Image 1 (cartoon, rainbow, N blue to C red):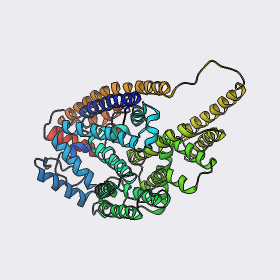
Image 2 (image 1 turned 90 degrees about the vertical axis):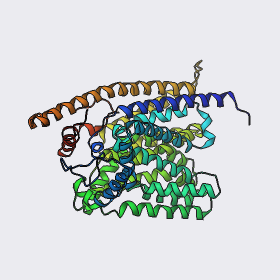
Image 3 (image 1 turned 180 degrees about the vertical axis):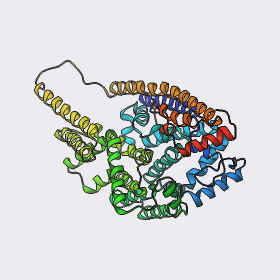
Image 4 (image 1 turned 135 degrees about the vertical axis):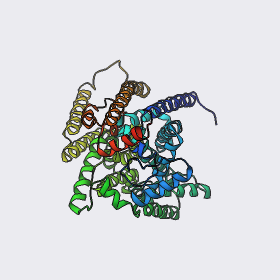
Length: 494
């Protein structure tokens, strides 16, 4: 096969992009301080609260398995993720930073892999655009990507979910490929409470709408979700976690519905930009009178993500970073729909689908009481209508201007996004210094038994960078107890 000049350019751009993203995430991961739970995970797990003065540091591989076992018995079913949290914190910051950067890079590559192969050559800057969207559009970025305890549970787990989706949709056949698919599905369904259910919905829709392999392949994949879901859901520590972390001893139907509504509202609000191309493609397919099966095939993963956001409500409490688990997988259909729409949309349906998508997004945000997002979507709709009207008015006039090329427009988007990334990176290091100063002040006050200073220092914690973990700005008796144990009792350096 002869490689074209465009292919070589894409490969060079991709290599530069992957290297730059890897180094940036590596640097940010390396300098992110240990925060609250990270200090906890340095010790053999015996429960959520610190037993001041009696905690034992993890000092061997055997301690890792002991801690994981105790976590499963006393604290919840995410034992797979938390075993790796124990492991990377024990191994050291460099080990974590390198692995974490690899997972972020891999997540972007898997998102690109989910786009139809025929669309990949349409824009040589596709991979940089994907990574920019990951830097700017994923929720609770610092908590979910850089914080050790959060990154393993959300970035790493989410990447495994992307891997499972990619394998299920792979056109490759053969025993080896099937085995890898089943392993990915089993692992993805065992990392948290929602991925198993999301995979079931996704696989069932694939089975009845766009089957590219034998039905037995999809049925076997469905069966592989059950052991993972059972591992997470049947943990004896779930009830204890519900009380200690979520603050609920008993979740009634009314509260579950209310929390599900709150999660769905946040999903629509924070995922508006990612949802927009999905809605545009949905309306285009409807206006184009595509077959129902084809529409369901395109919307399989968005439907699963919507269901996942609702299922999060069963916890009874809204935790912002939890939405990372349902918004990251949504990036695959978002980019796929965007590229598909840009490549094949034509005629009046193209504009009508954009109008309908913006109108729907405005309505959804109004229903979810996200008035700012509704106003933005509504404004975009007005601008689109106005631009379309001006285009019609000036359609009879000759113009020497040529429409901007995709490459030029992509470079503009990358440049503007890059400015935001640079700002958040610079301010990130300012926030790190601020956090270290806070820890030093609090630890010093604890040694003096000056509790007034300990609690008054909390009002100064206000991160500027979106990359700095919000968890570092939260001050509670739980966080203070582990600061006291690690920095005062054990005398570790800041």
